[in-house]
Amino acid sequence: MESPFVSLVILEYIDETFEGPSILPKDPYDRAIAHFWAKFLDDTCHIDEVILQCIPLLGKVLFGKGEEAEKSKEEFGGLLKILDNEFKDKKFFVGDTFGFADVAANFMAFWFGILEEASGVVLVTSEKFPNFCGWRDEYINRSQVKEYLPSRDGKNNQSCDMEKIKLLGVSLSPFTHRVEWALKIKGVEYELIVEDPQNKSPLLLESNPIHKKIPVLIHNGKPISESMVIVEYIDETFEGPSILPKDPYDRAIARFWAKFLDDKCLPAMGKALLGNEEEKEKAKEECSELLKILDNELKNKEFFVGDKIGFVDIAANVLAFWMGIIEEASGVILVTNKKFPNYYAWRDNYINCSQTKV
Ligand SMILES: N[C@@H](CCC(=O)N[C@@H](CS)C(=O)NCC(=O)O)C(=O)O
Image 1 (cartoon, protein in one colour):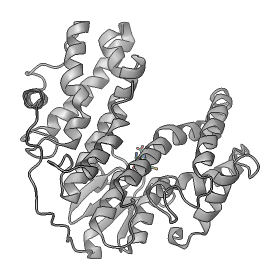
Image 2 (cartoon, rainbow, N blue to C red; image 1 turned 180 degrees about the vertical axis):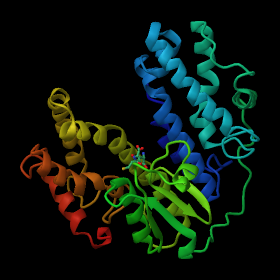
Image 3 (cartoon, rainbow, N blue to C red; image 1 turned 90 degrees about the vertical axis):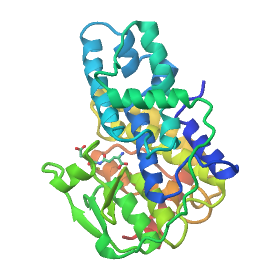
């Protein structure tokens, strides 16, 4: 069975390709917020794993035993609290209209209740999580959703005034650099506010209360978190060369590869280069397989999608710059020209591309 979260790439493709009510809001800020919540659910609930492997957090909570189940229950309670808080004064994730993030959360609305019944473990009660329950009711009662989002007259003309664009980041963070490159491609000026990860500023904590991580982009006083969500927001908001391709199919493919990089490649490469001895060997093998996939994808291509640097290349920046540096520092060499020639050539193209020289 396909994971419902890979299917979000398909959902966006459907939204962009076929006429009818919009699934994602038209306004770029609302779109970014919807992307943020869909990603939060994906990352935090481990739902794809629940469905595919039946062993992650929710599986442990509902069907686990002893200490592990108790710990998972606590963790899950925290997640429900965040969602409950998010639904305070709203019917759906983005305002009063059913949309992308709600579709992403379908598992929480339908399947979660069914699993609660099957396991006999009831985690959600209207006393404990009244707003979440309200959303769940709204969701279920809209199972044949007829009217999705109302059309909005896309007010896309935010000013590019530098004073209004702040980036909370860390100079050496590849996640911050994703956002910086996107801003550079669009020719947008911004103020970088350097954060100290050991001593996070009140502005960061209040702008990204969920993850408390950089980067955060603040545009017209409104915060957006998660680097690739921000990159997409920048692409939709500012004029200049496109970062995501225009064609809906190419866009879907670009999102697919960006997700593959974040979900599969970065964790494996982190372990292979910086993990402990035991996990290093296994992770190195996994990396080899993943690099083979990327190498194959880059055959006869300068960049991942199209002939100029774009969404996937930006997502992969860590593999272009930082991996080489970490390889040198750790002495673990994963990429050679002989083993992965296309990938190697892409890395050169990327490093030499003037657009990436921030
Ligand atoms: N998925 C996030 C990852 C961001 C991230 O991991 N940021 C790190 C710095 S590179 C951070 O803020 N770490 C501080 C912490 O974990 O408390 C994104 O794409 O923006």
